Length: 475
Image (cartoon, rainbow, N blue to C red; front, side):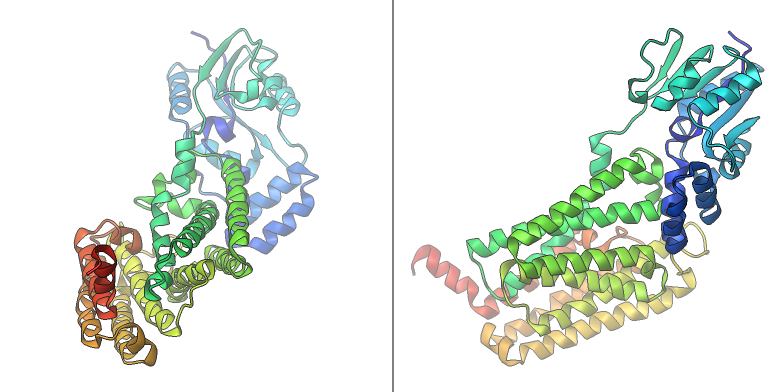
């Protein structure tokens, strides 16, 4: 047992995140122009950190911590030892963080000096003397501090900087590929089955068409995951206040922000590269989807009602992408039909979030409260009824009559479609579905049954079942 002070680094040591990166991404979400202007000061690290902290003050009580490091601090305090915080983050962030966790005193970056590496070592030696303290850190630059500490506590691998130290305690930390995969939200890729709609609607059941659409799905999945990462980085603080989203990798601190940024850049390159292999039209659709998604993440999702329209547009772009990938014509009727469906599903998404919210306040990062449930229900019903009316009009159009000779069967398909829409709206209003209605649909057996019945009736109306039966059995 020792009575020497225990000094904790903040970013990556006490915290499972980095406050500078947190501030940059919060600033990009709340005041992007000011944040980008702040990068002109990046040559002066202390001034840059101070400006980012001014633009985007953080909720330090929400920042994820290394529980083992915090337990080490609590044990030291119970033994009567001084436990201090020494951080390269700006003092305006370090002091509230230390106060929240009961740490004192605080050594931090101010406008005169960036307290990192040698500078931190000098400050701690001046306060406690060489060998007069134990120090917990996680970075290569912490080697300068460990060299003048009595005992080194190394969190994670520290870039191999702890080699050669004699008095060392190691605490495991780091990220895993599985956590990165979770950040990509692969379960959301099921939305990209929408790319197959133009092929199905045009009855273009050819191998080359199918393979082209599959490549389109790869491109759109990479693009969507790229934007999901951006969205999660912009929404870290709001996600930490959400009943389920708080478990997302960046919100929980299980994947470092710089790792997420690198993966994001790679996914963007894959999305555009695969799209370029298909066609220039596909590149344009994917690029527009990513740009609109970015605008949604930065600003549009915070605008009540506008966000639902943008969600519907993003879903509809998947159908446009399916046409661009395969070269199949997507009729205007199809786009007009599916857009109000997605308006209804966007409203269902918000109703679900409100039904499952912890209190009556606005949704984190959104401008909806439970008082909006009635208006959202009406909007979802308008979208559903509008889609059914458009479907009925399409069945009487020249194109509809040409593709579906048995028109009465096409009208019958309206019944299961209406049943599915009613089920989605009812479950969303009651809060009995996943936060994303499309993802929920892919696992909802009854809902899938409605859609399969509708699709089968449409195939009968088109005469496809008979044609396939004849091709298979030759009679």
